[in-house]
Image 1 (spheres, rainbow, N blue to C red):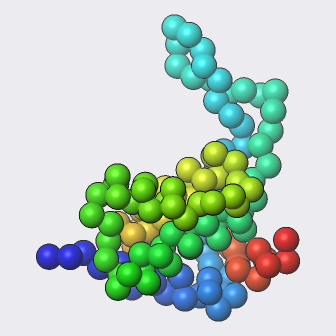
Image 2 (cartoon, rainbow, N blue to C red):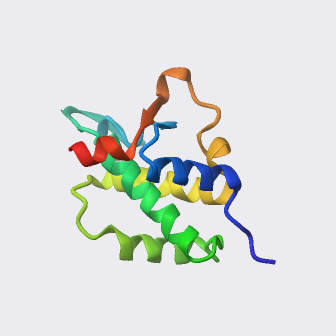
Length: 137
């Protein structure tokens, strides 16, 4: 049986394409992690990372849109998903953290649906993003 993309994920994609605001999460990290030999990684407070939410979400929706355009099948494996992402990324001007976060959200949305992918976070972590904001940047 072929798994299909959930209706709420397809609705979020349609809203994005139409330029409507989509409720989502802030993607990426504010700080890079730094190796700390003998201990776990620690936050590198010397550099703050700017996060481009609109472009990160544009990449997320590009991934979801690619799978939707293929007849809405869910990726056969995470390795297959990563291969597709690598083919789609080109140069979007995103940091590694933004790309990873966008791919992670896309994976969860394809697997669980949009609402479940973003559910369970503190209210301050939710944002609204739109395609029209990307076009303006």
